[in-house]
Structure formats: C-alpha cells, structure tokens
Amino acid sequence: MSNEQQLRHLLLLFIVLFQAKHLSVKAGEDLLAFLSFFVRSLGHSMEIPTKISTARTMVNYSKATDGLSRFLVCSACRSVYTSGRLHSRSCGYVRFPNNPYRQAQPCGNALFVGSSLKPVLEYPYNSIVETLKKFFMRPSCCIHTTNKVNIHG
Image 1 (cartoon, rainbow, N blue to C red):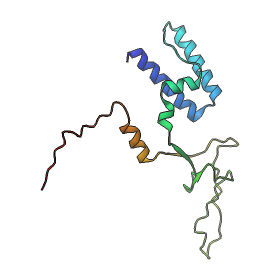
Image 2 (cartoon, rainbow, N blue to C red):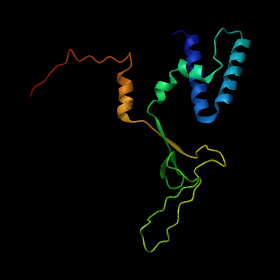
Image 3 (cartoon, rainbow, N blue to C red):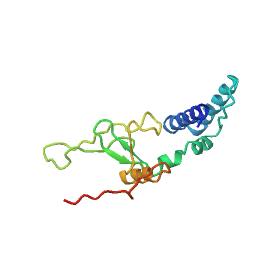
Image 4 (cartoon, rainbow, N blue to C red):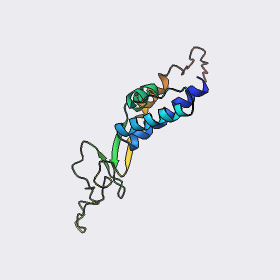
C-alpha cells in the first residue's frame, strides 16, 4: 500500500468512525464532500468518496462492527439498559428496593443528552468469542500447528 493509499484509508476510517459516533449520515457525506474538494484544491489526485456507504465499504466498517452491541448506562448509578427495553428517558433503578426502612426512590438521572436521542453514557460490547473468530479468520493470521512439539512428562 502506498503512502497516499494509507493516508486515504486513515482519513476515511476517521471520518466513518466520527460520523458513526457524532454525525448524521447527511452531515458525514457533507464532510466527505468538503474533504474531497479540499484534497483536490491542494493538487492531490487522491480520490475521496462522497457517500458514507462507499467509505464504509472501503474501510471494511461492517466487518469491524458485526456482533457489536451497544448499551445505555446511567452516569450516576451505572445501571445498564438495552435500547429495546428502555421505556423512559430517565433511570428507573431503585437502590435496595426491598429494604423496609428506606423509601424506594428511583435514581431519576437523565439517560439522554437534552431532548436528543444521544445517550449520556454508552457501553459498546463485543463477545470475546466473536472477536477471536474475527481475529483468526483474517487472511494475514497464520497459525502453524504442523510442527508442534509434544512434551510428555
């Protein structure tokens, strides 16, 4: 891979990851269009795609995120919520709910920033089994087991 190809891959990877965390698809495509214009105005022949889907394909983004689960986490009490189970915008965790001497008060901390759907705290999780499968299925991963030495003792 040439230096220009490595630079393009790094730029696209950054844009794709930044867009996935902080921007809408349209804003990500606007950023790619600006980057493409900027690179051409500097006189480089580097081709930058203008579609997020094309950039994701070029950096194998879907392979990196397969099997990845995201959980919402309360920033106050650290309760974990799956996005499908959530019915409220605030944390409903009750500490010691069966204690007869305490009043059962929910945490009540906001799980989202303002009125948006952006979580205050998010926990990405990928199974270690899935991660190891991806690691060992790479073409560059070669494990030689034919010259294995058995030590009995």
